[in-house]
Amino acid sequence: MLRYALIFLVIALIAEALGLGGVAGESAWIAHVLFVIFLVLFIVSLVFRGGRRPPV
Image (cartoon, rainbow, N blue to C red; front, side, top):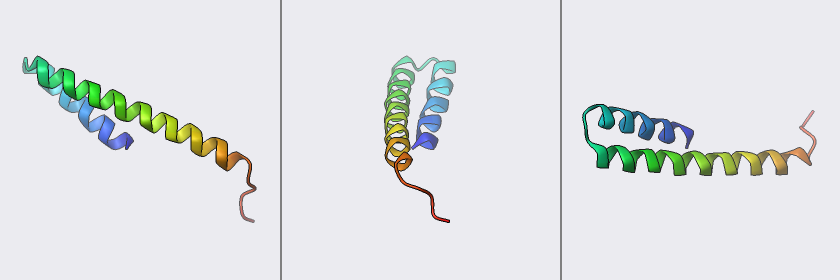
């Protein structure tokens, strides 16, 4: 998911450089949403994995 967020960020930067404001804005918004979802899932996985001991 982080990979897709970075891809949309690159698309937004390229679209902004080409003067495509609408495409850049939408791509940046999608990248932001994907990054927030990634962070939430990452934190949830850390919280729930923290209670278990790793296999030996």
